[in-house]
Image 1: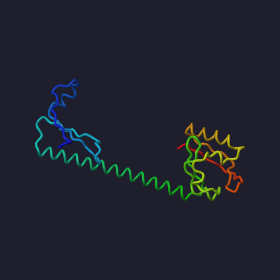
Image 2: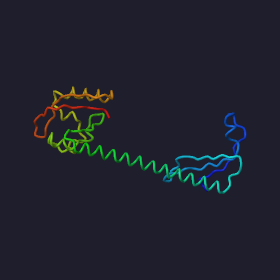
Image 3: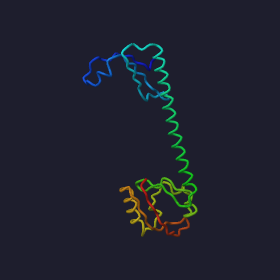
Image 4: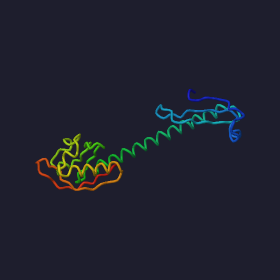
Length: 178
């Protein structure tokens, strides 16, 4: 088949340990998953491989391909399940959860932001989070944010955040670099 290559291996190799393992004929069969080459199965023997052995090797390569595809599907399912759980946790939390880029722009705002601050979550996405913080607190919060971002540690700080009605709400923030 197109995925098989027959070769004769040298009887002497520069590595003495390989001399005991190599030196006969080899069949290399490509293992593909969803049309993408992922591995190579190499079978070596001293004699020419008979048709039955070739069919068995091809069957083994098909089984390996199916096993790899199954592992890929399982990994994808676990990742999707984990993402769905995380999304459900955030959506049902009464705490305001924000995902902020390293430069301070809000990338995600949980739905609870509306109940707490009166802003639709989508209205805050893309803005610098310090624009929502009281001017007297902004420098300290920015410093804590940079420390958490750069160190990989977390910071807890208290500050005032502007409500949609213009009033200031006293809050405690926990910033973690995920």
